[in-house]
Amino acid sequence: MDILVVAATEAEILPFLGLSPQQRQGIDTLVTGVGMVATALAIGQRLASARYDLLLNVGIAGSFDKSIALGEVVCVVQDTFSELGVEDGDQFVNSELLGLAQCTFISDQRHTMLHSLRKCSGITVNTVHGNEDTINEVVKRLNPDTESMEGAAVFYAGHHFGIPVIQVRAISNYVERRNKANWQLPLAIDNLNRWLAAFTPE
Figure 1 (tube, rainbow, N blue to C red):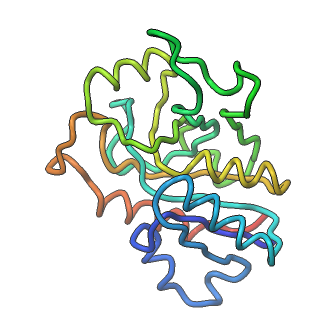
Figure 2: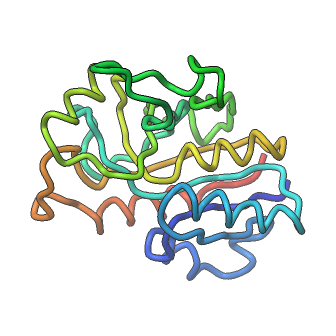
């Protein structure tokens, strides 16, 4: 099995990149840049000249659910482009209801290394939430567990290229008013890379 590990930034997978080629056998990496546009473009460019059996999207994420511990590694099994649609007065109508484009993607992968991970639903955004009003609105509308800036874009690319996708994230912060003092980036990156280093193709 040939696997492409997809991450937004090198920092998120730097410990994994430091492993020997033998330890990463059968696994290529792609650093896309931050955001859904950069991610979709980078994956499209790579898949134009290479073929993989699995896209494994990894990175950090924010959590709406404070029962998820900071640093915990989770599997995002459903992800939604939460901003893709139109406003109609006080209502938001997503792109699927408009008949324009799919906005929610679901992973049905059953890799054994996912069994021990909490299964979450996520949203993918251009603007990370840091305002109580918009946080409450998206929680009421979609009730997501996690938030990233790339996840659904990887699902989108996998869907169009016919390649299965797994998304695994480590929680670096809670979705709240921006406060870097509360973030646990080193812990999240360390836990994520420990999980990734143990990942084996099936």
